Length: 312
Ligand SMILES: NC(=O)c1ccc[n+]([C@@H]2O[C@H](COP(=O)([O-])OP(=O)(O)OC[C@H]3O[C@@H](n4cnc5c(N)ncnc54)[C@H](OP(=O)(O)O)[C@@H]3O)[C@@H](O)[C@H]2O)c1
Image (cartoon, rainbow, N blue to C red):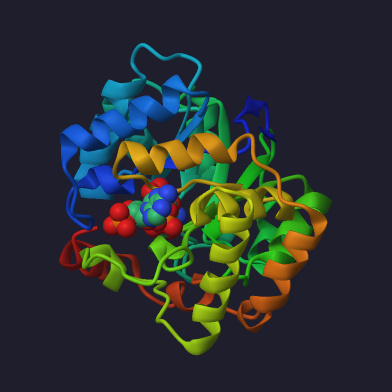
């Protein structure tokens, strides 16, 4: 798949886990996992300035230093409108380079949408990034945002998407029409789409969280059965489902076994029948809302306060 001019393969990885606050991780194991993924053909990593207050970006920066082929994506937080360039500069210092710079979420309503998008353009004009994108924008916002740019194009929108949170499907269609790619965050629903028992990481209590219900259990069971039939793991099946739907998944991994699933998913394809099976059982989750609209009502200073409290 291509995101703008960037060749990203079929599946990438996310590095929120390397922030070290929201997820319980062993950093030596984490390093082995990401190195395993990069050694075996994974070409894209996503991070953000707020993950561990820059710690995730520093971790990614060390890993990609001698790997020029890896596409590095990060996200600037919208706490200080007018200071996106400064944020981008600090992120680039930690990462060494930025290939895709994204706005982490839409601006509060009192900041004009186009002003926020043009901040990204300024960062691209200043040479801080090769491409620009956004995150957590719904279809309505994207329909406006793509026309805000003058010289650059918005090449991606990173939103929550997985078989238990399918609210982004109209956005995938809009992306085909308007020329941007949907990057799926929490592509495994933080594990809830692939297993019954979940660890007690703080991340599993923050933001867009899936609570187990009889309907969600039916989805997990269906995915498990397909995995058994095809002698693979549920995570491989879910990541292949993303590819079939036209989205680009960026699972977070904690260990080499999980990284191996990401690697395997690059070569694994579901049949039309298997895709239809998952689509059918996960139908109750089509209308889930994206985080967007409510978030715009919260002023930037309050967002900052909430995020520092949450320890993302
Ligand atoms: N733009 C945004 O607002 C936003 C929001 C959230 C995330 N993101 C990005 O999206 C990335 C991924 O999202 P996420 O980390 O929230 O959720 P995710 O990728 O759906 O879930 C990751 C968790 O699932 C478990 N897991 C991973 N691989 C597995 C496998 N093969 N089999 C079974 N369990 C597995 C691991 O936890 P355990 O080992 O504890 O089970 C891992 O920490 C993040 O790293 C970040 O880059 C962006």
